[in-house]
Length: 76
Image (cartoon, rainbow, N blue to C red):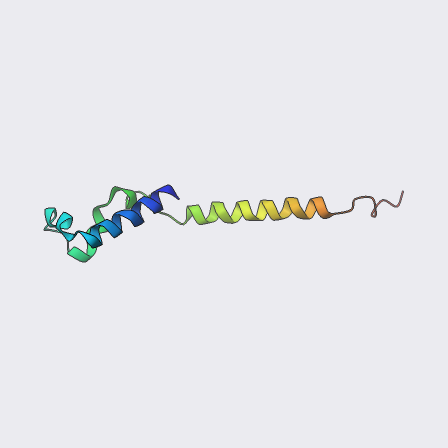
């Protein structure tokens, strides 16, 4: 998540100041993020979304277990 915020800030800075991109003339101006180290080796990956989804599911399961009245099902 931190990497994503850094990447967004970097993109905004590069949009405002395109002279930064001039140092890499081999890269197209619209593809200035291609050489960003945050994007290499899965720096920004959907793994974050999977972890968030798992946390939400665990939280929901815990809430459901707390809401369950365990004494109703006791027939013994």
